[in-house]
Length: 165
Image 1 (cartoon, one colour):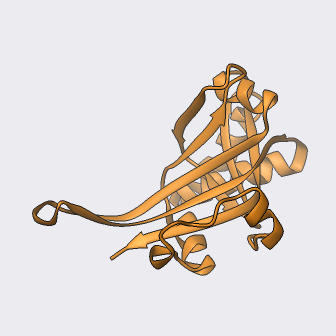
Image 2 (cartoon, helix red, strand yellow):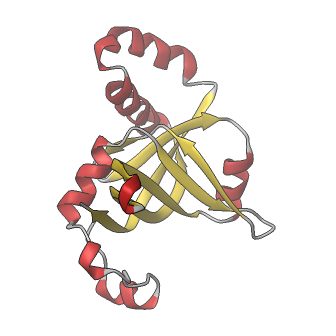
């Protein structure tokens, strides 16, 4: 799922400029799995980028997040399903060196609403990630909230990780 098509990398996605900071696919997936907040970036119908931080879960190589039934990010996804999603971890400020240690991952893919059982599975993945000590309460939350929210899935097309330590 996360393996990039080499032809696509050369035609669609740029090669990372700082190859010396490139993380392995395994390290990138680890950052994605451990991350608490990611930033979803979409493009508006006017051509402006829109980045919004949100909670998410990774399940079977896809990224799931929840949102209201309407809003700016949904309008943008409807107009252009191509998105990027960024997670930063292991941040260590180095003030005396005017630098920062970090790890980050950027995912490129297409976003779409999921319905039915996949919607419930996406919600369960989010509850399990953020509220694993409250799974029984989470089941009730899902039952009540599922009709008032949407679950969006990002089908990952390309993933790249970068870090400095």
